[in-house]
Image (cartoon, rainbow, N blue to C red; front, side, top):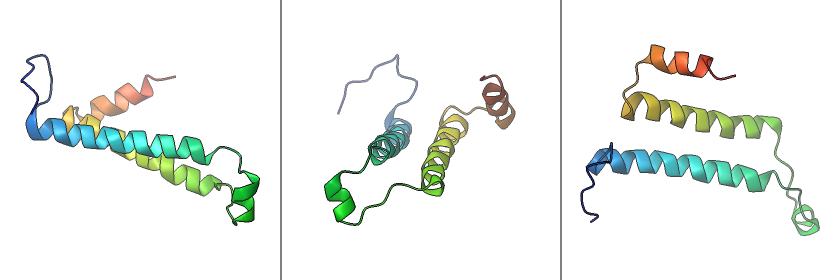
Length: 90
């Protein structure tokens, strides 16, 4: 167990939960990055096909959902605050 760090905004179960969600984002994004690489000859011979736009959309939707859950459930932002923060991004 790590020693307590008073500078951490999350501890215990809350920290575990948010780290799990952030790890999910990391795994999805990393996987998507590699899945977008061109297929090798071996991949094509094995029957692999490039991702479809719908498959890419599903992965990106999952990332957006997880980030929203973090903002609302862990950061405790109000829905209006989260919407406003998103609207401010260009």
